[in-house]
Length: 492
Image (cartoon, rainbow, N blue to C red; front, side):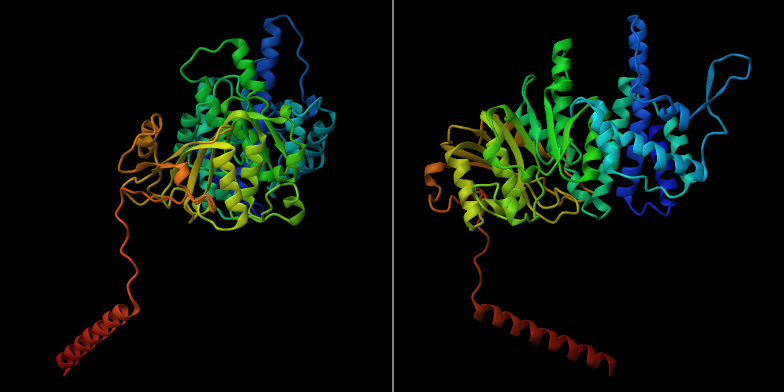
C-alpha cells in the first residue's frame, strides 16, 4: 500500500506547476509526511501518558493539528461521537487550503525554533524544517490530494516505520538522476553497510557525519547497533539521544536527513543545519570530539578564501577540508571510514601531500578500499574509502581493489555480495588477487604517494613509440583504400 501511495503522490506532483523534478517531489512529500508523522507521534505519547495516569500537553496547538486542518474526520453517522477514517468533505481545499498553509501554518511552525529549549528537541526540528523550506505546490487541489493520500499512511508500528523507511530511501536514490546535484545526497547503501561493518561502532560511541546529506551513514549505524540484540531502556535512550550527530549545509538535504532518521526510528535527530567548514579547527575542544566518523563529503566543490583560513592546510578542495575536520574532531583512538576521490592518493599539490603525511604520521591509516567506476551512479568519478584511527601511526597499509567482474551502473548497481570478500579479508588484512600490503617505510617520504598499484595485476602495455603509431596508421589507410577500390569495382 505504501509504495502505491508514494507513486500516486508523485503522479499528483508531476501535474503541479510548482514541482519540476524528483527533488521537488521528495521535498514536498517530506514536509507533509513529517506533519503526519508528528500527529501519530503525539497520539502515541498521549496514549502512553493516559496509561500511566498522566496528562499529555500536545506540541502543536489545536488549530494547527493534522486532524483539524489537514484531515478532519467524519462522525460515523449513528449518533456516536466516534470518528471514521473518512476525511470530512468540508475540509480545506483549493485557495483556502493554500492560504492557510502559506499564511498561517508555516509561520506558526517556524516559531518553534525560537521557543524550543534546545536543538536536541523535536520542537526545534519542527521550527528548523519549516524555516528552511516553503510549500511549492501551487494548486490547492493538488495539495488536498497529496494530504488525502498521506493521511492513509500510518507510523504507529515498527513494521510500518520499517517499510516506510525503505520506500523513502528509494525516493532519495531516485534523486541521483534528477539533476541539481541530487546525487550528492545518496551513497549506495551496500557501501555504507560495509563501511559501518568495518568500523564496527559500539553502543556508547558518539558517531558523527559532518556532511550528513540524507543521513544514510547515521541510519545504517543505528540499524547496526540495534540489530540482533535486546537493548535495555538505558541503551535505547543512549541510541536515541546521545549517539548520532550530524551537520548539513544544504536545506533540502537537511530536511531529508531529518526525515530519514525519523523514519528509521530516531525521534529527534541531532542534525544541525550549518556549514561545517565555516567552523575553525582551532576552536574544536575535547568536549566537541567523537568516537566515530562515517562520511562521504562532497568532492569537486571549492570553498572561499575566508573558509580556508579555518584550516592549517590551505586548499579550496572541499573534500580535503572535510578530511582535516574529521581528523581534528576525532577523539584519540577514534575510528573513521571516509569516502574520497581516488586522485587524493596521488595528487602532487601541497595540500594533498600534507594530508597524506598527516594520515601516515598522526593517524593509523590501516585500510584503503579502491572502488571501481560506476559505484556512484551518475557521478563519473573513481573513489576510495579511507579507514583510519586517530593516534599511533601505521607500519603497514592494507589495500583492496574491488573487482566485481562486471561494469557497475544504474541498471547494475553495487551490492553487498560484491563487497563480501573485502569484509572477510579486512579482518586479518589478508592477501589475495585483489589485496596487498604496503610497508609505510617503503612509501616515498617526500610525496607520501599512496597510489593504488596492485602487484598481482600485470602492468599495462608501455606507451608505444611515435614511429610505431605512424606505421600502423599508414597500414590502416592503405587497407581502407583497398576496400574502397573493391567497392568501386563492384559498382561498375
